[in-house]
Amino acid sequence: MPHPAPLIDPFARPISYLRVSVTDRCDFRCVYCMAEHMQFLPKAELLTLEELDRLCSTFVGMGVQKLRITGGEPLVRRGIMGFFRNMSRHLGNGLEELTLTTNGSQLGRFAQELFDCGVRRVNVSLDTLDAGKFAQITRWGRLPQVLDGIRAARDAGLRVKLNVVALKGVNEDELFDITRWCADEGHDLTFIEVMPMGDLGGEDRLDQYWPLSDLRARLAERYTLTDLPERTGGPARYVRLEETGQKIGFITPLTHNFCESCNRVRLTCTGELFMCLGQEDRADLRAPLRAHSDDAPLRDAIRNAIALKPKGHDFDYSRQSVGGQMTRHMSHTGG
Ligand code: SAM
Ligand code: SF4
Image (cartoon, rainbow, N blue to C red; front, top):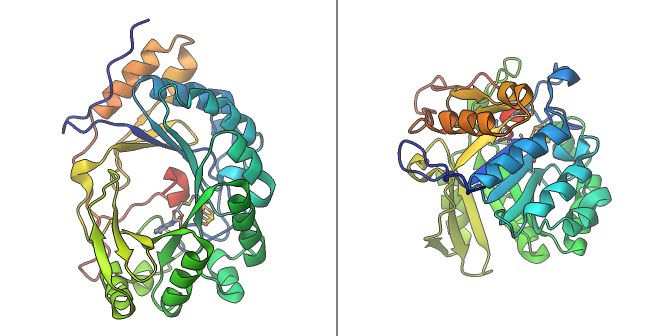
């Protein structure tokens, strides 16, 4: 069969990166991500792992080169290692990278197997090195388990990147400790600005908003920062700390416009495709997936969806209220 044409959106952006949320469930309840008593989706709504395989494989066949598995917490989905193993058949065969974003709690169990499936890098979300603060932020998480997981990942040969959500008044005072720890342990580091996602029971995201421009200025008080030209098609911008040689990323979706080079779309665990993290535009892929055993209608649905990818998002913290706020949770689209 001839190769289907690659996915190009109406703004001439090639879509080569698919982020897949394989579950909305999680063993943590991070305050900026979930309410403590979350209503999770009924299991029947979720795509099976076989359906997720078929969907992801279809995307790979249409030019997706990078798959990031996320959630919820991807490693709490039962059978997820079988899914990774199956996906690894595409590596070197269209797919260039298979990776995941995890809270790290299950890495102690799964790091070696992930490596064996061809995973080479993991993003681990960790906002503090203080056990008390960690318990406050994640509500149900325990820091030593995550630190053990990170160690297991490194021992298995996985490169670890720490994703740190910058939280005013929470981890502000740990900026240099976290930076130093990553340098010592050989982990990459990216800071993320907190985003206005979901209704989390009246907690005010504005209170914790710590602009990365400010965080960066503070880093510059101690280190020499050199801007790096690299772009990944996403919101991250990078600098090098000359004193340590570290590369540090900043994800500032609210203060920078990165949409012009966007190369990604997001698939939820129910088979909805979100064309933009900050917009409601979506397409249902579950219906065409379940209605036909032939992949052609699914490919048509994907193409039609990509044709609707919007130009960009409208997040805005500049006023006292949060503009462009999304009503869905990060755990729905996987961040
Ligand atoms: N459970 C996994 C984890 O925590 O890495 C994967 C899913 S989680 C939704 C993906 C990323 O979204 C994490 O790095 C998390 O810190 C981030 N995140 C969640 N809610 C956020 C928010 N309101 N603003 C910014 N980042 C957020
Ligand atoms: Fe779970 Fe990740 Fe959300 Fe925290 S950020 S509640 S670990 S999905």
